[in-house]
Amino acid sequence: MIITSLLDTDLYKFTMMQVVLHQFPGAEVEYQFKCRNAGAPGISDLAPYVNEIREEIRGLCRLQFQDDELAYLKAMRFIKSDFVDFLGLFRLNEKYVSVTALPSGEIEVSIKGPWLHTILFEIPILAIINEVYFRSTQKQPDITEGRQRLDTKIRQLHVRGLGELRIADYGTRRRFGKVWHEEVLHTLAKRLGTGSTGQFAGTSNVLFAMTLGLTPLGTMAHEYLQACQALGPRLRDSQVFGFESWAKEYRGDLGIALSDVYGMSAFLRDFDLYFCKLFDGARHDSGDPFQWGERMLAHYAKNRVDPKTKTLIFSDALTIPRTIELYQQFKARCHLAFGIGTNLTNDLGYEPLQIVIKMVRCNGQPVAKLSDTPSKNMCDDEKYMAYLRQVFDVPSAH
Image (cartoon, rainbow, N blue to C red):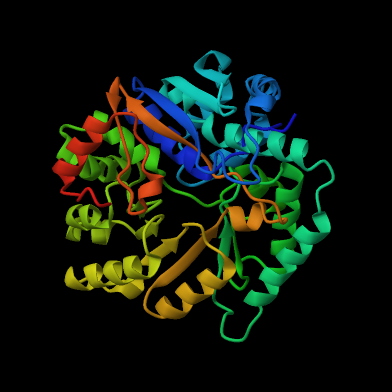
């Protein structure tokens, strides 16, 4: 079994799931899978692995939260006891997932059902698809190469003037495999150091945070703000509704706002003085990160908020050199955090799978993301995308 614990997922799945339990328990959703590099040279199709993937998902659906896992979650200051009680009874149900081989050689993965009962599928299913694929195509992986690449990254950070640059692991969904993921985290913690003086800030993976004594990290993901398109009072106010619902749940905790569900311009229009003060900062996940950072700092200044009191988190396809460049540009101007995914957990010399599972419907309505990186857009209803652009004044060139 690839997944042996329901904690083997990202923290933001639990923080979002708690909001769903308390505020949207009746929401029905649908997610779709996409492989962005399907058909690329060197990437074989996933259809041959359908039975193996299904078997792993079957195993995933047999798991329950253990007492020590529930105790770990309960100890987090922002997790409520009724949510932990709910998780004590929780199991994933296989009836909400279908995995189909297509004639093209690709696969179709559909997740459909109550949001509360399907939200925990995404990360483990992506991790399963990755590991099944790589253990089938790379039967004797070049671990030595992976270790050398990791060593190079660590040495790039061990440079004078970078002592306050801190990175975090966001790589569960695209990891080469679970065992390699754990080795990477162990190595980073040992060689970069953890805590307030170390350069390794922690991991989005709750299981490894627990077992390795690391800090678990995460707040909200795109699906939360997308669902608000169907759950809020009216579409134009859905981003504001999402932020207000989040603040209602967490009362100022977990205050990092995701900025790229409708593009940066639409985000800044909604992220007014109230939200500038209420939220601790914002996360970048598409578009030019340098431009984004400058626009965020200017926006805070315009709203008479000291940028030095706020945190900018960068998490879009980061490498160590790119992270260092961003750090050099923004250090001393604000608090900084960097979440690195694929480049940490799947860099052994093989082409990584660029796979995602995104929400496409909520309560029977289409939902979508209008990214500053057009290839990240995902919606199965072109009319709705056009309407969304119109409502949020996002040009179609995006």
